[in-house]
Length: 71
Image (cartoon, rainbow, N blue to C red; front, side, top):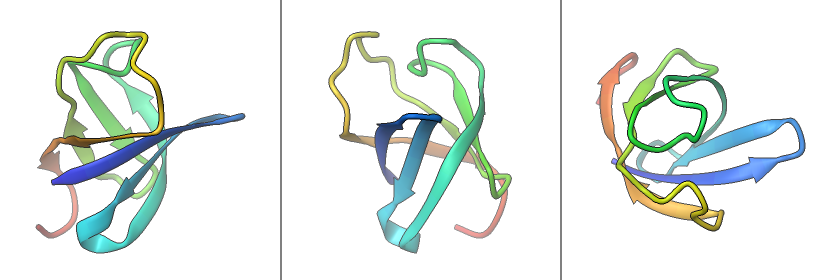
């Protein structure tokens, strides 16, 4: 799924265009966001692509949903 990641003063936020859904990222496998999983406030978990830790945000990436909700 296409997921747009942006930085907010209180953390990261993800926008899933296919579902017109915006949720706060509440947990992540790796501190740098990239190359591991992230969990959204609604319970969905996405596997994030490997990107440079200095990647400029906002950015739209192809992330694989690994749990939560409907496809």
